[in-house]
Amino acid sequence: MLAVDLTGDAVKAKNGSMVAYDGQMAFKKMTGGGEGLRGMVTRRLTGEQMTVMEVQGHGTCFFADRASEINLVNLRGEKLYVESSNLLCTDAGLRTGTTFTGLRGASTGNGLFTTTVEGSGQAAIISDGPAVVLRVSAQYPLSVDPGAYIAHTGNLQQSFQSGVTFRTLIGEGSGEAFQIRFEGEGLVYVQPSERNTIGGDV
Image 1: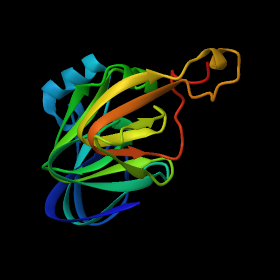
Image 2: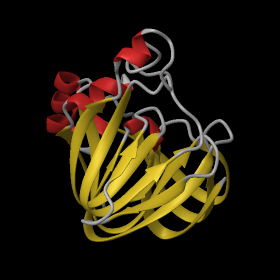
Image 3: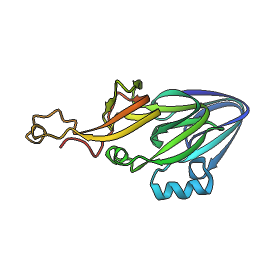
Image 4: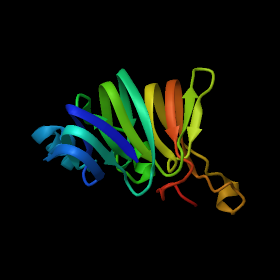
């Protein structure tokens, strides 16, 4: 559960994620994932759906989503790339948008686009189990199962690689048919659980 202390300021949160609050709070549904009319049109075209509410007031507001683990990400002007289903709450001053992910999005079953969060402030992302933050460097690229991927930050290039071999086809492979390969400099958030993905067992 995430406890957010408000002193007249506001946060943006996943619609329906408020579980309790004390003090005085006002809740307002936002269109287009909090990005206004343009964001609503963009999200309808891209299929990256996200329903957001703005919470403003004085007191403490508590947020949760199906008892998922909550991870805080501190942004200092950089951009966070995150699946919309894994974004719980952000500071109101952070800007959200959508970006093209290509085959990575298709492999996770979440479509070809993902959500971006940028600016200075905090974002709360959720995971199925405690997330692990893995560092990627020029010397140490990283390969991740699409179903375990949550989010990433930094200057990272993504490629889609297949682990399908003859051994896989005759049933002697590892069962991990596809991976996302990250190269560059940045951080990748991975959960200890796998969503059902297109790149499942062959």
